[in-house]
Length: 205
Image (cartoon, rainbow, N blue to C red; front, side, top):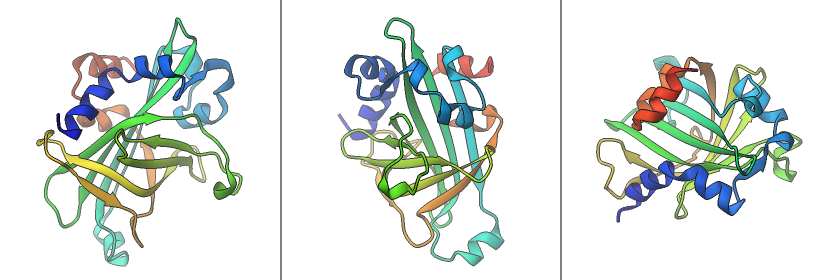
């Protein structure tokens, strides 16, 4: 089975796996500070929560950053409570457009709770990863709660109309390492979601 097919399968059973393994499931009561800012809501009071961040870079920005490969980025993060385990799990979907490559690309996986380490200089970051050594991203709050910073070393992405191909690596370079995205309405992230039940759940938010 191709890696992208595995990613799609993983997305559909993500929270079950997280609750069972404990690796990406977190006690609801202990995991609220960062997520309240991220979701602009108390995710412990809702079964499912979503938040969407987007940035489309204009010609002036791209002209000033000639080495930047990404022309647009969309980030959807989901928080869901397992009522039996009383644990909170996170997942993400990332959409990318390139300035010199046609088509829409995306990736997905699970996220851990926000943490502070020596490299973050006191800032909390939520680390999100792609299965099978597919890399990932770190998400932290921006200067205001309406923005996030997406920090990128390397992540595996796929053309979204060719889900069974081998994909490609998006690596952070001189102008592709940190992306500031803006909070936007959920409908701007719906193109990242193919599951009908999840789309229905998003429409109620």
